Amino acid sequence: MIVCVCHRVSDRDIAIAASSGCPDFEALQDDLRVATACGACRDCACAVFEESRVEGAAPRGRGMVVVPIRLAA
Image 1 (spheres, helix red, strand yellow):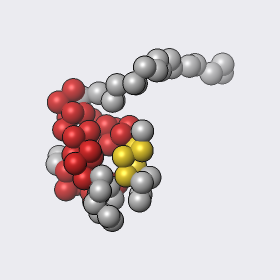
Image 2: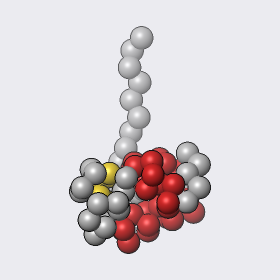
Image 3: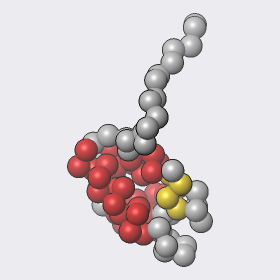
Image 4: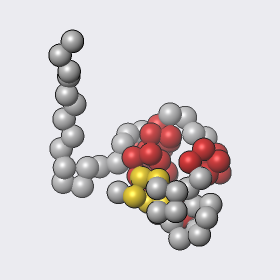
């Protein structure tokens, strides 16, 4: 799901940054520019960031199953 329309930042982008060691929301803003334009996404972006830090995983798939594929070498 796109969280920040202005900079096209998804919940997955935020979760990856959080699980990769992004220390706080301000650093996330510096890295992804989320919630730095109009600011309408700030509450949602903060919630996704905090949830991802607590869970340490990507956001839930909202009814979708993600199956990794292996490409033949």
